Length: 200
Image (tube, rainbow, N blue to C red):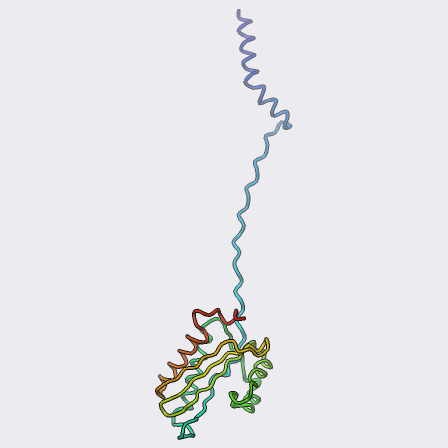
């Protein structure tokens, strides 16, 4: 009786452990390695486009009024307007102004640039610029002035890619600054337009 019980117990033990032993033998006695975890790809950070190199010739002044010769303070007002233009362009982040001094004599010789039949494009290219920005303030009377500003792509065939005109009914520092800010905000760097560096 005891021998029968012993054989039954041995059979039960074999049934429990034999499949595991057989599996280990089939795999060389080693358990299968766990599948390696897949690495999560690092997010790709887009490289921002480099700002355009721009030759900012700024505004020139033309007194087309019956008075002629300009009024006291307008030369200083022109400097003020061009300083504000340079500040607004730099703040956009799309443009970096290049130094115009290496060609200061040539620029002075060609001035006024709004009458030189596109010579500002040649000057800008010679300075290594990709675009040029130039404009003119025309005074038709002491209270009526017209501000024109244009951006020319000098790297691809002298194409005008932005332009704007605004008239003022006043001739004070604030009138001039308001006109410059309007042109830059609503015509040159308008929010509904692509950045200048992405312009076709």
